[in-house]
Image (cartoon, rainbow over all chains, first blue to last red; front, side, top):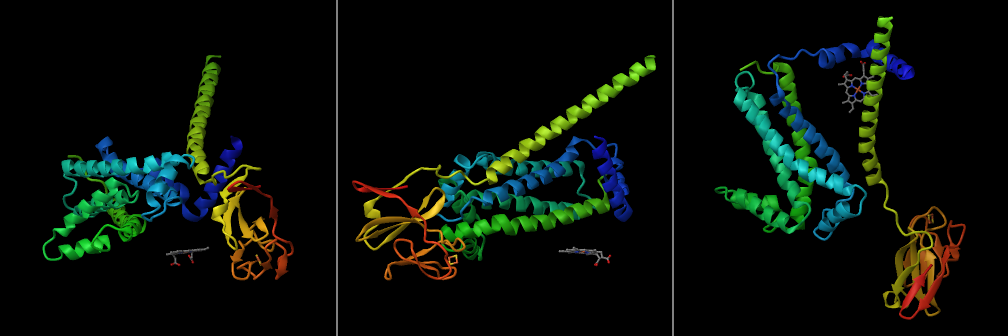
Length: 223
Length: 145
Ligand code: HEM
Ligand code: FES
């Protein structure tokens, strides 16, 4: 115990000398000044972020066994769920918390709406939040195709028919998303790249903006 | 007197809570780390001494069939003399050898080591012949190992 305390102190001293670590901890954690009116409704933003971190973690683990081809996709998902030790855990965590994250983001949005927290000077927090919701939903949609089940396949057909109904550019948009006229292996690899690289990176950029604005403007006042 | 008792009891309460806290943290941490380590560890493959069976039809004369024996790549070749099973791991630096059907020999893609059908080194850097694996014919099947 004494040894741990000693090491702890030495590390903090070292960091303090260079980066004012203790001051940073005081200001941002242990003595952070929080409004009296803050209650548990204010947790949904942070919980959404936690959910996103869980998706990143479990998603990376799934990538280690998942194979994005029509021949192997379902078999590799079944292999993860049935044969890989604790694969069921990471697979279930990823698919269940995908749904939970969507709910959390929506609760967060409702909280902001209810408190009128989107008003000046926080308009762009709302705008970036709308993007975060859309990207989260796009994550769910692109991820849903990956196991290549009947549900995935028909879900992807319906989901891509919808932008297909856009006036003038609909047909072009539909073919762009599918990578062809039909849902094929090309669609699968396309959705895979979007699901594991494009959308997460975009999400991180918008999260950065979102958090930076919160830090800058501060949390909204009591109702 | 009373003061010292109070102090003692609050001390043991504190150390108990500390122990409880550390235990809960330790168990939670272990509960996260253990599944991750198990998930990332390679799946156990064939057990030691386990034999591999294939159908004779799978290896026509002149052809080779690559398979996994005790977790390592192996190869079965069918020549006029019969079936031979060898480890497919080059004895130089461990690349997987290729079967050249027209030449009837193995070639290593890494540093051009060459082996004949019995695994003997023909040329190149490999210091030892390919490891022999026992083959038994039984009916329409061959049993390796
Ligand atoms: C993607 C990689 C990195 C990025 C984006 C990055 C970025 C930065 C930035 C923006 C600064 C502020 C001062 C400046 O502009 O020089 C800085 C300072 C510094 N970085 Fe990095 N850095 C990276 C990698 C590294 C690595 C690999 C090292 C050392 C192993 C390093 C060591 C330092 C040091 C010592 C300073 C202080 C320099 C000074 O004050 O004179 N950085 N870095
Ligand atoms: S590893 Fe086979 S020749 Fe070097």
